[in-house]
Length: 113
Image (tube, rainbow, N blue to C red):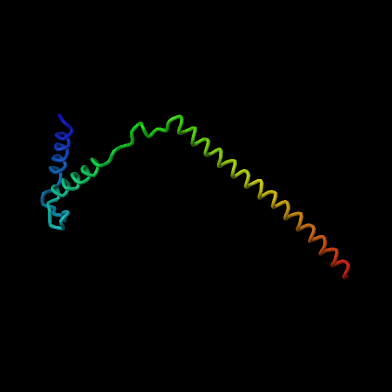
């Protein structure tokens, strides 16, 4: 039994289980019996699925791609570490300047008093 035959059987069972007297709006906004609408929806989604191509094993990165990614990540890590070191040095320099100015202001305040 082919997959198309099996699908038709499943759709037919689904249609048989639904009540024929229920009317819903079809794609063209015209009244349609519920089983017919179900068939429209299933057919539409199956057509959309045919356009979908699942990922294949070729999407698994190769050793070369992983090595290149590792190299790029290592380069970025080094750049960020350098920025962190520079910001720490700048922070230390600002701390030294702040302490020097604070000491000078404190000394001048004491002299004025």
